Length: 369
Image (cartoon, rainbow, N blue to C red; front, side, top):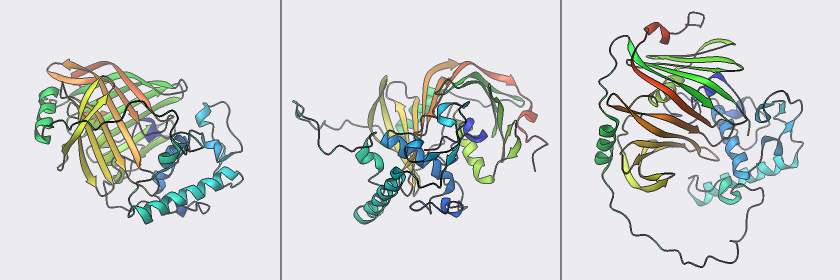
């Protein structure tokens, strides 16, 4: 429910979802520093605000429905004015929300063997008042079960994808790919974005907005963020997450999961896609949507189970164009279920084989080593 901003999130790194379990390091529980947290004490701190955003979307409300906002900064955008008093129990809606969360947790534990089968959205569907009955009059047509369509194997779908993208021979030394365009979000927030990719695990993203410039870099096993507040070297647990984000801008956008399998066909906005799923770890699944006609990757959806609601991150790719035998999308949409964080990146120009200095990816010297 909190629309927090940070340098890492501004550049589209999903620090709480996607690759949420890339290391064995135990995340700090949210209850460690929030003594008034009652139901979600054991939830990792990094998952708390993304989960609360999904709670607010499930009920179709904003943060102030449950939380007290004592001193908002009205010069900022409506979803990010701050001034929250998170530990206040003044509003009865917050007390009721605790009861409902506890009910969901207990229901899943006692009726579904601990699986997260019931969530806030199961009943609320974007409304504070759940519907008890289907609308009348009933539908005139009787529902039918369509016959299952024959599906290709995961090997066939993956081979079609790699062939559709085209052969990328890899960047020559001191050359790379530069993507330039616009980053757009709700409430009129926008900025110019430039992505630079080098050989190996080298990535640099710069977002320039009216509020200032933020740059994120990846140089092998070192990831960092530079903003007007200074330079920060990211923790080792964040490096794999940055690496996953960097791959979105390369021709082949994901490494093939070992247990990938094709499970069905789903209709997207402008065509059908084969849906292939894989279990990344016990709580994380990934669904890849490959265009039935072109073979190209159209959607990448990662779902991470939590104590209350599954966290999701969805990346949609569109407007693929041929650049010297390699196809790259000129439009990308990223969403984690919270409207404030949803972004669309539209690239005006993508240049391959551009001269790139390795120094552009290195940790700036002002950051702690």
